[in-house]
Amino acid sequence: MNRVAIEGKVLSENERAATELRAEFAHHGIFAVNLIGSPGSGKTALLERTLESFDPSRRVAVLTGDIQTDADAQRLSRYGFPARQITTAGACHLDARMVRRSLEGWDLTGIDLLFIENVGNLVCPTSYDLGEAHKIVLLSVTEGEEKPLKYPGIFFKADLMAITKVDLLPYVPFQAHVAEANARSIHPGIEIVRVSSLLKTGLDGWLEWIDRHAVTIGAV
Amino acid sequence: MHEVAVAGGILDAVRAEALARKPARSVKVGIRIGGMAGVDPGSLAFCFEALVEGTDLEPLELDIEPGIADELEFCYLELEPT
Image (cartoon, rainbow over all chains, first blue to last red; front, side, top):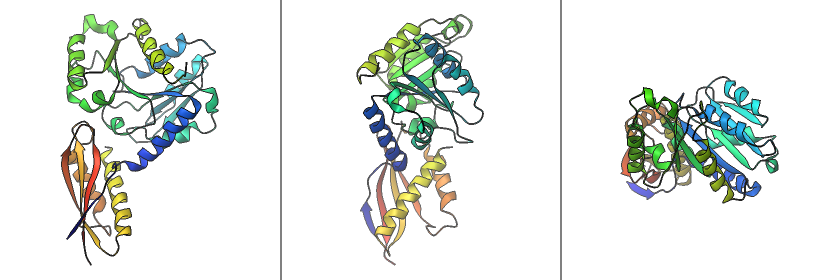
């Protein structure tokens, strides 16, 4: 029996595609973020409020992933910015090749900020690098504050946690400070914002985070 | 169930490695999975077995070792001279 060492990541094909995407984003000065959260955590709603707040001159684009329907792309294209649907037809996550294909035909020189809304899922999207600058995890107050402990992978990899639907806090047993402590126990450096897309509160902190990180690659 | 895709990725890598080391036959592949990798070892072992069954790689074994943080990496391949 002969044992040989082999190295490299198991998802090396995705890694390769993600590395190419990252280089392409860097080349065009695109700041890309990957939004991950459970189904119904408010990813699309947060993006709607975000796009609504932007000046029409802002060079922003959105890719949104779902297993079926282009409902989200329809919702997001109302704000005057390019939005495209990625329909995975069964796959529970986006991978780097899907993102590459979906960018075809877009003039990347005209995009500074790219939002990639992943398929609603706290598990599988964690493993797939999409070439993004940051992963962002959404946790809605109807989900329970123990989610960071139950699904540690995404909270470990995300640089920002957005607690969403905070307008519902008076009506649910969710304790935001416990959720935040849980997230920090997994990832001490994670940044946190609290938002309500319905009441449009807390958006300043969210938008400030985007601008602060986008500026580091010169993409505002 | 992205473990199916992960298992497929392992088999692709084993095939590529085996091709370079012909005519030795691949017997066992070792990988490391960290607790933050978002991959369930039990589910991966199940998918791996299902994908290997009935192929030229059967009876290839999968050895899963605990890794650090979000590691999802190859460690080794065991080959048998034919």
